Length: 345
Ligand SMILES: Nc1ncnc2c1ncn2[C@@H]1O[C@H](COP(=O)(O)OP(=O)(O)OP(=O)(O)O)[C@@H](O)[C@H]1O
Image (cartoon, rainbow, N blue to C red; front, side, top):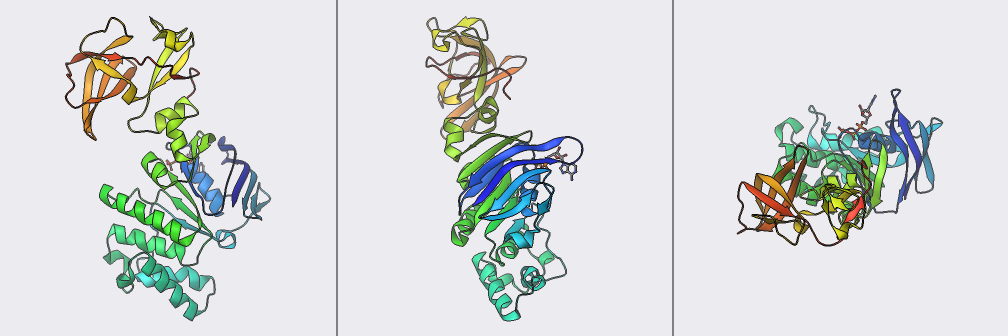
């Protein structure tokens, strides 16, 4: 439904989106995931028609909506609705007035508008707030109004730019469920920008992980966890983040030879659950000494982070009753790990 081909953006001081191509079917929930500054908002703004690409094309279905510097259809001609991090509501209008306004501007008849406004407010569970001013309602309610305003024109593409980042943790979980429901009920295709991997894996049907304007990996969310395509993805996705341990010529840290490393060099992906700890080195296993930094109870286990050397911290997931002296050893896994090329960040 959305297809992006060789999309580029340069604001004048170097490329911020570089040669991005991807396609998702009708009804998909695409999440653009990446750290601050990786270009995800710029991508979304190009999808919305708020920013002109420097090169490449965007299609919604069969419609070419952007083509390099030659063409960029405005948002209302794309059938796209947008919700920002700041809700951008009009404080001097009521809740119903806010939802009605874009319909009015689009020239819709008053009777149809009334129907659409009620439908959108009901869908967001805020029908009883219709007559209130937006300054008189809570942040979570304002977010619902912003969503109602977006869905009232029945867009075929819904675009979200970090819509939950202004909400507290509990409300964020509640609104995440609401967004999933909204997406399912409207049947629209959604594109959602976030740096929060939990939002990405819970909402998405497809995730594009962006790093410095390029796609690092484009896949279903579970695939990011099961088969990260690069050390960058492995570091960015997963709780706790995976450990990436330097190996050289088949030796952990270049000094602990291990046949499981098959003579290779690079960064070995070792998940917290595959790292054990011991109070002293074990004779028959590769071990590395560490100083205890932090212990976090999580889901019935302990996440133990230790400092191995100046630049490396590792995290292991261990049973709750594990012994944890100040100084201990991480026991490295015996299976063959995934090894990424060195410097692949
Ligand atoms: N209007 C603009 N003019 C010039 N540079 C811009 C403009 N908008 C964004 N940039 C730059 O483009 C790069 C990507 O910004 P963008 O907002 O797309 O990233 P992001 O991944 O959404 O980051 P964040 O999560 O912090 O919003 C940044 O280096 C930013 O400074």
